[in-house]
Image (cartoon, helix red, strand yellow):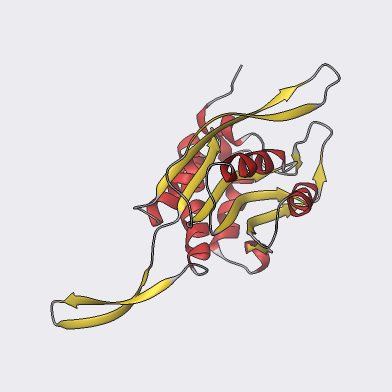
Length: 216
């Protein structure tokens, strides 16, 4: 299943519009905080799909019966661009365990590339909900490789893949190669075009560079 969060007008669309704006991108603090805010909004939407149980809470005036999360999800992100987006999720799921994945594009002499997953730190996640977040789904390769690597470390109950922007090609690739009965995709915007170098158009540029500075 694919959930497109921009299908209704909301402040989420406004924030995505701001981080796409090349002039506003010059304010690195504003850009970084916007990614955090988007993580919080995505977390809120995904929270509607999680399991809750009624618990009694003592207030100053009595006892209230309220629905509370049965357990926190496990949060995973791909370094380095995904860190602020992940922070937004962690602001909402504040007791969640976290996974950090080091993945990069290995470019070959013919100009093609493959995704390499070098390192990941994994807590106990058997039977838990996994939220795998990154700012963009371009080709979908990094998400697929990361998902498969994590599944070798534990059997989760369900995986939610979250990305602020996605390409049509990338999302279709994920749907083709991952078991969609076990995976739900959440994205803010889906762009049609993907360049030969696998950049989303119009996209928003390199979120890692915009957040932390250009790499060499």
